[in-house]
Amino acid sequence: MSNATQLLHSIPVDPLTGAISVPIYQTSTFVQEAPGVNKGYDYARSNNPTRGTLESIVAQLEKGNHASAFSSGLAAIDAVLKLLKTGDEIVAVDDIYGGAFRLFTQVYEKFGIKITYVDTTDIANVFNAITTNTKLIWLETPTNPTLKISDIEAIAKIAKASNCLLCVDSTFASPALQQPLTLGADIVVHSATKYLGGHSDLIAGIVITKEAALGEKIKFLQNACGAILSPFDSWLLIRGIETLHLRVKQHCINAQAVAEWLSAHPLVDKIFYPGLPSHYNHAIAKKQAKGFGGIVSFTLKEDTDAAGIAFVTSTKYFLLAESLGGIKSLISHSANMTHKSIPADIRRANGVSDSLIRLSVGLEEVEDLIADLKQAFEKIATKLQLNILQSA
Ligand SMILES: *Cc1c(COP(=O)(O)O)cnc(C)c1O
Image (tube, rainbow, N blue to C red; front, side, top):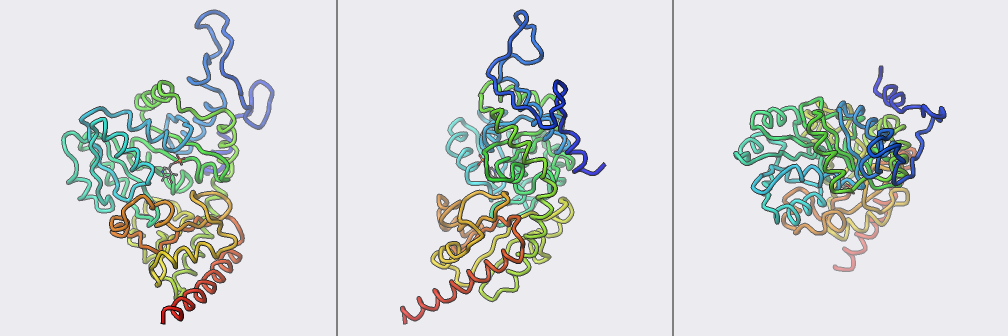
């Protein structure tokens, strides 16, 4: 059975009424026959049937056994960090999501957890950073916004040999393209706000594990700390996931066409898309994923803040906004948006130069998207020429 068929038929028909859409159990509590005698539910923070259905759908999608849904991607990441204790260490990808970096350094370092950041695209760096206190390896692959790819299978072997857990933030790939648990990872997290939801209409996160005991620990933390996903958002997320495979397939087709068109443009300097053979991690991307995703980043020959801003304010269909993975195309200027809090020299050293523009390529007709980019280049060319004339 193909993954799409399996997904659609893992969404149960309601046994009570035959409803084909998963019912929203908008309730806080469940009436009991006698103390402790119930129908499997007692209080909706601990368990809710709508959320439970979502969790089992996503567990199957990731080829895991356990999933827990949270009120945001960061709440999901936070639950994984709470598996650790004071004195433990994490080896993390250097090109990490800004919100995860903030959580690690401003919240968890305070509790005595040490984090070492390395370029995980070279597995030797991971190996060398591990100490006897390392309990968790934190990968994000592909990364934001330069789409670096790390070898999950090779790093999973290092994790096993070093007796630590491997967690992969697989948000940029989605389970339609990459299933880290099948490559040896212990934990997968998603910001379901992005491709899983797919419609830019909710904030959600999810943690998936292979081992039941680890899944139980996350479930315990979900109930103990309380950052659960609501019944309505669980339903909305199921609704989004129903078209995951279809959407992601088209995101990949559109992004590949946009990346190829951009790479031939005279005003473009660097282009970052794992589906281009010129991308530094193309080979590993091809090996471990079914497709290259919907995110394309590029820099301008005129590598300045002003040129980046001029470009992102010149598009019509690419809407200027943070976030990614929705059906409508989005554009952002990393230096002034997602990476604004990172010191400029560190940001540049990570490949995020001043003009870097990130596209979340949506599901519009790709000809319209390319025409939109074309007119934006024409606009900035005029504008930049004007600047040159003025300064002469
Ligand atoms: C957006 C994002 C997050 C955070 O998720 P929220 O749902 O915004 O809390 C974590 N990791 C990655 C890679 C993301 O893109």
